[in-house]
Image (cartoon, rainbow, N blue to C red; front, side):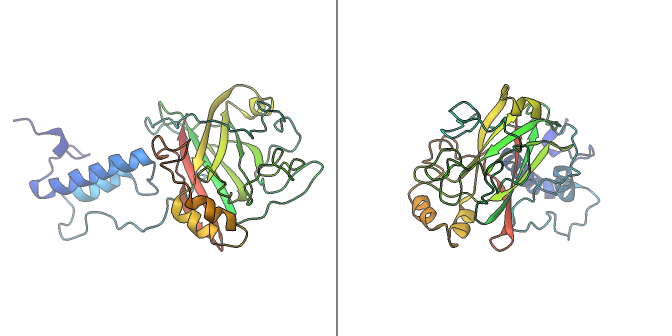
Length: 292
């Protein structure tokens, strides 16, 4: 009789009956975490092997103990090789303040826009945006294959601690801080040094980005491969907004939710919620892998 393929492990061995329930649970967990993009350093194969291998110690814990911390930001040495298909990040609006020439001002052709530290304005102003430090790490992959998109151009922007967008909002029209372009590295990753954005009225805390085929197309306002947004998780929002300077964000956040947000509300931002690490005192890292 042919063995049900659900009970065959990664080595081709039949999993004994005592371990089948655990394997089913782990594979269910794997599927869910794949959908949410939450796996960090623990490999899927290793996780399954730990509970299904005939040679494993039956008295040992079958599942590695997970710590309640967020997935760390992508490693610079991460492989660019195909990792298998992943869900494409949803297309979202660039909003009314893109600064890419589609709604008035165009900052993309300004000298100085290609940079990793976006906290300060460049050109005629050197104003530095204040706020809790935030590193934003985006890893761009081909949704069909999982391969890292090396050399892609990423333009990223967001509001400041007061909920204002440089170039557009009253009082900061002459600033261009919290905007920048970078090229993805050999792992398909870009990292921006920034500050934690506010929660302004009517929107869940978020960060905008556009993906281009390369930096040359980005700074020339060429064809956009993907326009989307990153959502910041509620538990970290609460911690950051309890600090000085973010007082109005506390009120605004209390009046909205991911489910009611006009961008993330359709699916609760399942493919756009960043994995977080760090602290208020030391700064946070928001990491997200996106399929395009």
